[in-house]
Amino acid sequence: MTNAKTISTLIVEDSALMRILLSDILKSDPSIELVGTAKNGKEGVEKARLLEPDVIISDMIMPDYDGVYLVEKVMKESPTPVILLSSLEKNDGLVFDALQKGAFDFLDKPKDDITNSIKAKNYPLTKLVKAAAESKIKKIKVKKNNHSHAFNGSAAYSAIVIGASTGGPGAIETLLKQLPNNLILPVIIAQHMPDSFITSFAKRLDTLSDLHVKVAESGEEIKSGYIYIAPGHANMRLRKNPHSGAVIVNFTDKVYTEFNNPSIDCLLESASEIYGNKMIGLILTGMGRDGTEGLKKVKAKGGITIAQDEDTSVVYGMPKSAFDSGATDRLVPLNQLGGYIVSCL
Image 1 (spheres, rainbow, N blue to C red):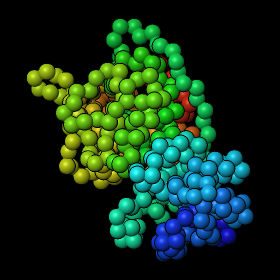
Image 2: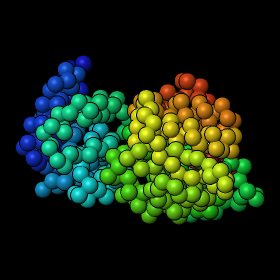
Image 3: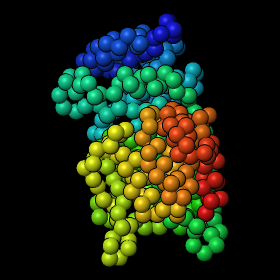
Image 4: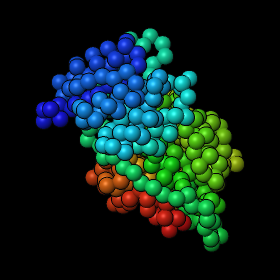
């Protein structure tokens, strides 16, 4: 940092308009200092070496080396939080590749009325820059679990419900690789992510896991051995069919305090009402407090509550909130979470 009170930031973007818009946003916050701009990934890497910024904001698709190249080079040479800007039509699969290589997080690049969308008060660029500046660069390698687990009859628990935000895509990938390929209960996940990326995220996880991963749909029954991802267009909750007793996916218009679409609190609270002491609730890395109130409900019902520990969290916001509030007394490193969960079953 050039000043103890400012966060030095580098913008890497091939669009001159976007460079101007992003620069204006950063300059409007006195705690952030724009130290340079670059037009492509190659120039971005060179500027990163020269300027040593605290945070890099980079477009995903650029001529002459893209965002994946930049992330890969930066993480090898001088690990620095990278925030990616991407839109679905530009090959969203690259975003998840970049996240797996160490990118901090990504923002959905507006497709229409870019100027007003970028300048809107709810566009979370400065918030993400501040979180990135305080984050930890994590590289946790876990081999895929190709083994079955010997379950003695039915499992002691009926569902695993997970909430994650910033740093979550990589953490979820790591966790799913640790789970046995014959898991006999459903896994239900709420990941803070733009709805336009949720389907691709689910497809990516499906290729990495022996369990079937899909985006949850309204009215469908929750089945054992499946992994369900909450969509990003509504708050997802679970309800029980009064006739069959099956657990059904449902969406609600109820607005939650911490985060919406999807709300982790909403999912955990509804799951606790159905599964009671037969569920495992888990909060992974992320900004804010979403999940804390929901995890409290799980604990009150007698379910197991877990949070990712500080050392392996990209952002120790949601796990810290859950731990400090007493919603959980178990902090587990990411590379041990799968084993811990299986030991409970």
